[in-house]
Length: 385
Image (cartoon, rainbow, N blue to C red; front, side, top):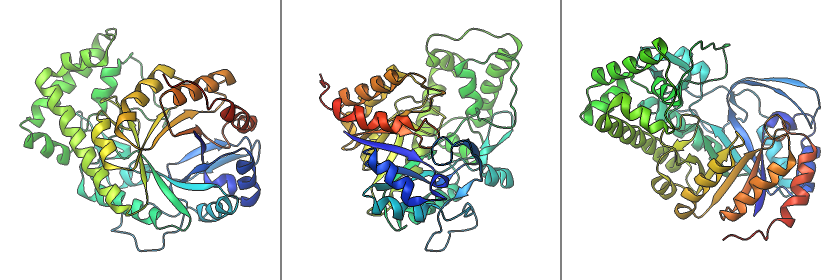
């Protein structure tokens, strides 16, 4: 099983060759390098330990061709190109990691393209995949990255519906929300989504009424969550409406992904997926069979230290793809014990994954690269039955 890491080009800003050599020495086969990323603030652990870096949202590479329309994210800096060249020279493959619809600046400037919940609130961190302009923007980003020199593949994150939860703006919630309430708040009822629902026989106004009533009921009289999110979701919407809603949203995501994969041409694409149909965290959810048929590979990521969830998603995805990657959080804040890393690696081996990717270089302690180098060869022979 190959070992891989996620990384941001800012880690290569001072000395690309030295960082590439460090990764190669750790036995890293592939770096999933952020070619398009959301904004953030990273405390670096390895390339420049202790440095705090503010990351502007946008592209970290300079496309060779023209942008389609005016929706393209800005070029922050061309750091991905030199990083890819250094990685290639060190014998490490580069996959362009694209965070597609998590576009705060664009969603803020163009609220007509943003997710809009049942209460009419536009989410300024996420674009709606039912919008034709958004699909064109997402496909163009893929086309540009696929054509960048040295890119050997693409990792598509946030090519799906995102959700209500978003780290930013010092969000405050005074009432305990159930998982189903968070999902209901994540449902988009913008004009484009309303048209999709109407075409499927759903009255968008009635759907909005049901969602608002359920959320307001929880705010007024908080109830404990049922053991299964689906139970509360069906109670809120009714079985028929619930099932139709999931089917419509899944169809919208499949159209988005089909356009993105077509735009990649011959460059292999791996989709970030989960078997959870309620997912709104950047993964395409609910249909591993259909998703696996549309791309060269599937990536199952779990950044919340949930080994059973990782195992379940890998088992669901394995029969439907020829290239399966398990991605796990290597950051010490999430994974303080190295033996948990080893357990995640073993889960990936047992599931028949082709690659194990750690998130993320320069966020996790530097010695976890050494762990990857030592542990991976020793664990290749874990039984798969």
